[in-house]
Image 1 (cartoon, rainbow, N blue to C red):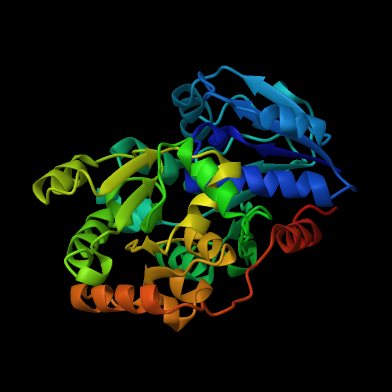
Image 2 (image 1 turned 90 degrees about the vertical axis):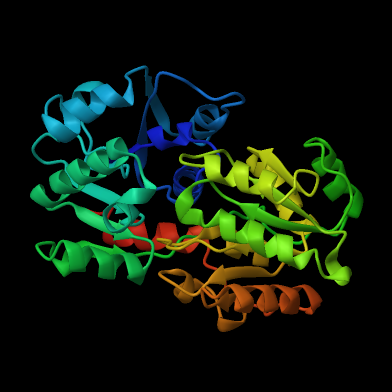
Length: 370
C-alpha cells in the first residue's frame, strides 16, 4: 500500500505536535517495511537546521515539499474542499491528515487523522480565533467523510464523543504516544553540562519546564511556586529553566517574572534541539508541568525516562499516563508541598512508558490495511 502523511506541522519546531509528527513518522519508516510512504510538506518557511526532510528521505520515504502558505491551504481544503491532494503527490491508498488540514481525496483513498486534543473547543480563550476556526473546519470535514480518527488518550476520546456525538465510536481508536529512544539516563555528567553550556546554562540546581509558553500550560503558577520554593533556605540556590518557544498570549509571563524580581533566577532557554533535550531533563532536579488540560503530555514521561521526577496537575489525560505520586490537585499550597516532597525524594517510581514501536504496530494493523 501507498500511504501519504501530512508532515507540515514539523515547521513548528519545539511544539508538541511537531514532536509527535517527527517521532511518529520516523518510527513508521523504521518499523513498517510493508508499506510505501509519501510525505506531504508545505510551508513558506523552513526553520534553521531543518534536517527532518532529508532524514525521512534517507529512511526511504518520498517527500513532496511545496511552498504553499497554510492560509491558502486552509481555504482550499478546509473551507472550499477543492484541489485533491493526489493532484500534488500522486495516487495513494491512505491519506493521514494533520490536526489542521483535511484535503479532499480522490475516490478510493481512505482518510485517517490524528486529533490530539480539543483545547480549541473546550478552552477557546487559550487560542487565537484563526486556530479555533481551522480546527473546527478540519474536524467538520473529518466527520463528513467518516475518516478514521486516532486519539492519544481516553480523555480525548471522551471529549470527542461529548462534543461531537455524531461521530461513531467505532471510528475512534486510542493509541498512547511513545517517547523517543534518546530519552534515558545519561551517566556522563561531563556530557550533560557540555551540552547545556551551548545554551549558556551553567552547573547548578534546576527546576525545568518543557513546552510552549502559552496560557493553557499554566506557566504563571509554575513561576509562583518557584518563587515560594526559593524562600526556603534549603532551595534558595535553585534556578528555573523554561525550555520551549514562545507561543501566544505570553506577555503576562514576562511581566510576572519582572514583578517578582526573578530575572536572575529564571532563564528562557528557547528552542532546544531534539538530541540535546535529554541532557536538560538529566540535569534537572524536577520537571514542573502544571498544564490545565492535555490531550496527552509527553514532557513528564520524557523526564521520568531520564530519571528525573515530574509534577503535573491531576486532570485530563495526565491521570492516565502518570501515577498518583507525580500528580497534585490544583491547590497552590499542595503544589508547593508536593514540589518539596519530590525534590527530597531521591528515588523515582518506575513506570511502564509507551514506545513508538507499539504505536506503529497498532496503527498499521488497524488503519493502514486493505
